[in-house]
Length: 114
Image 1 (cartoon, rainbow, N blue to C red):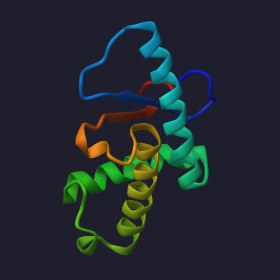
Image 2 (cartoon, rainbow, N blue to C red):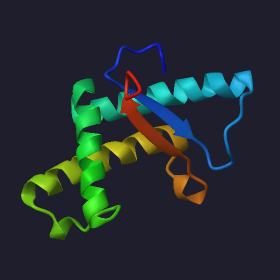
Image 3 (cartoon, helix red, strand yellow):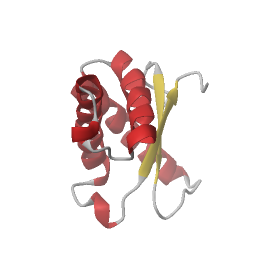
Image 4 (cartoon, helix red, strand yellow):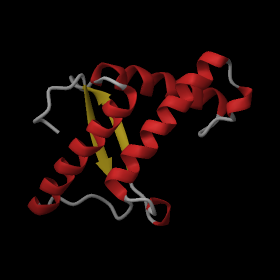
């Protein structure tokens, strides 16, 4: 997803494995762009995506994924709810509402890859 100037990069994976076919690469880039736009629209700003994602990852590591929202502090719950809503919108936009029947996965990294 090189065409957007974002502080993060999205990489989508599918359950059938990745392919290097040019048409699939173009489709993946379009899907990754759509995924990124849905995340930032839901969270309010592109600069919020990576920090909220990283905070959610720490919460999920401590409490499980998805975490039991009742077990979280108010601040943790706010982050978890925001991320889970953004993730749901992005996944549905890219993989469709029936994604659980053969869904893909994603990775979000800093734009510089570190």
